[in-house]
Structure formats: structure tokens, C-alpha cells
Image 1 (cartoon, rainbow, N blue to C red):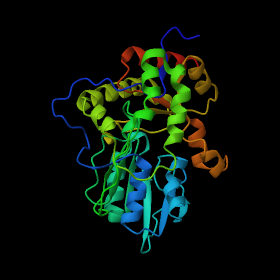
Image 2: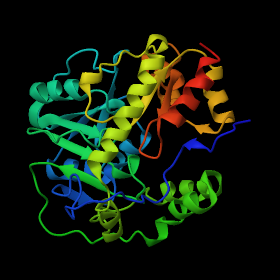
Image 3: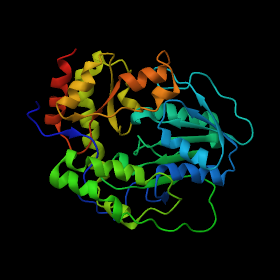
Image 4: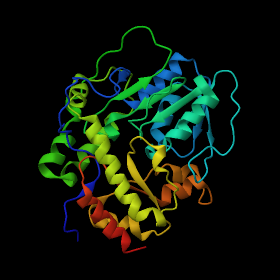
Length: 324
């Protein structure tokens, strides 16, 4: 068994490390209660009639489309996480692209120049990416910080009227338990919290979420994440089947290590290094010969976030090295 504390998994309550500004990164955006509701906001404001979606995405992104009865078409990506061929958009049609793992910054900018206002960029995994000048950009702070909910949106069309303010009190228990009792103690509450976000109407971001975010030293967090990412990359890049350009990112969410060795993921979990699968729904949407299926099966998202140092990165490397 592991000789070190659990690594990875959901966040505990963000402790903050000092922020003199009183604000937070993206506090000038439209602040809503979830990232998927940011997507719904775009669909409503722009009267979207059809959406091209990546097949390699989280199934919660379909929730707004189904809610509004908007048709969609899945498009394929290649092993470099890029669209295989250009998609021609008719009037009322938009395209969603995900800045995967926060490592596709340059490509995201390229798509903005190609699709303009028709591009909806999902930066749930790329909180530090600057918002598009032309197009629509969505962020999910809880993928990067210990907050219960929230979404940030940059878009040119505004829906008139005000939405009610969300309340996050009933979504805090897993954040406290992770700190006081450990990751496993709060996991059930974490799952319940995720489930509680399904079907939520569009609301403004809660005051609690904004307050927690305002305590974060965003530059310090960025530096820690990037340093941890570099440490893993230096040791694992020769065996990583995903090509990564360090100049193509501001701040990644995780380190995507792709391997066809099926034992690596399970051994990491056994050693209490919690790694997710992005995304299990993809196995239902694709067959085992498609790139998306293989990505979901083979990409191991290694934790590199601000909770950890070089010591934890060395522990991760040590476990993986057994199989390389």
C-alpha cells in the first residue's frame, strides 16, 4: 500500500494564499452558477439552432441542448486533440471546442480566427486561458479550486433582465470533509453535490463561491501547477503518447499521460493516487476503434494542482515507472 497521503481527487475547501486585489481571475465575466448554464446562456442569447459537439466531451454538456431541444452533431478529433476536418457552419449553427486539459491554447486561438462568433470555447479545463476576443468562452472554477459551484462566461450578447443569485450552503459538506476527514470520507457528498447541479436553472454565482475565489493567489497557483506539470513531463514525456508543447499553455488542469498499459491506472488508484476517466460516457458514444474511445481509455489525468509539490510528483513518477 501507499506510504504517502492520498493524492488527487476532488478538492477540499480552497484555503487561499493571499489576494490583495479583492477580486479574482475572470470576475469581470458573466458569473453564473455552473459552466453548463454558461453554455445554455450562449444558446439562448444567440438563438442557436444546431451545434457541432466534440464526441470527446463530458455528457453534462448535452444537458442544455436537450433542455432547449436544440439538435447537435458529434464531430471527431485526432490524436493531437484537434478537429479532423473543417466544419462548414450554416446560419444558426455553432461549434464547441474543448481546450483539452488546458494544453491546447494556441489551437484554441486558431479556431477563434477560423470560426469567429460561431465558436464556443469550453475552457472548463483551462481556467487561465484568456477569453476570446471574438467568440464565446466558458470557465468552470471548481475544476481548479475548492469551490462548490460556479461558471464564468465571456460573450458578446447579453440576455436582458437579472437572474436570481444562487445559494451554495448545501453544497459545502464535501469541501469541509476533505480537509477534516480525508478524501474518502467526503466522496459520497462530492458525488451528491455533482448530482445536485443537474437541471439547475440559470442563476448568478453565489456570494459564497465568489468570496472563496477572492482569497486565491492566482499567480501562485499558476506557478505551482506549471512547475508540477514540468516535473512530470520531464520524467514521462518519452513514454507519453500525447505530444505536448510546453509553450502551448498558460496553466494546465492536469498532466495527461497516455499509455496503452491498462495496469498503470489501477495501480495509481491502489496507491491512493486518484485519477479520473475523461469521460466514461465516451465509451457509449464511440466504438473501440475510434480515437475518442482510445483517449478515454488510455489518457490518465495525473494531478498537478496547487495542493502538491515536487514530493508528490516524485511519488506519482515512482508508481508509473514500475510499468515503463
